Length: 94
Image (tube, rainbow, N blue to C red):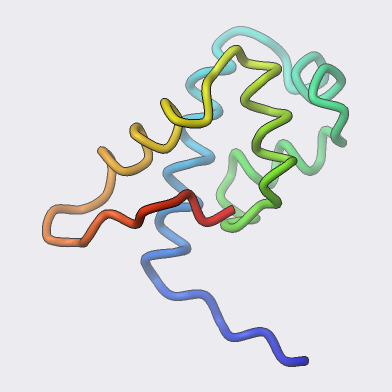
C-alpha cells in the first residue's frame, strides 16, 4: 500500500504541534519527558522539530500526559496557530 504524500497544511500542523510541545516542556529535559512518556528521546526530538508531522495518537497522548496537557487543550492551541483562511480540522491529525 502506497502512502499519499502529506499536504503542506499537514506538515505545518506538525511543526505547530512540535513547537507547542517544546514550549510546554519548558525547562524540563527531553530525557525526563521522554522517559515519563515512555518514548525514545529521538522520537521526542523529531516531533518537537516537526520532522514527524503526523505522530501516532498514543505517542502524542503520552507526551501530553507527561507534560500535564489535555489533548483537547492541545488541539485548540494547534487550531489557534493555523494560518487565517484555513478551515480548522475537526480532529488532531496524529
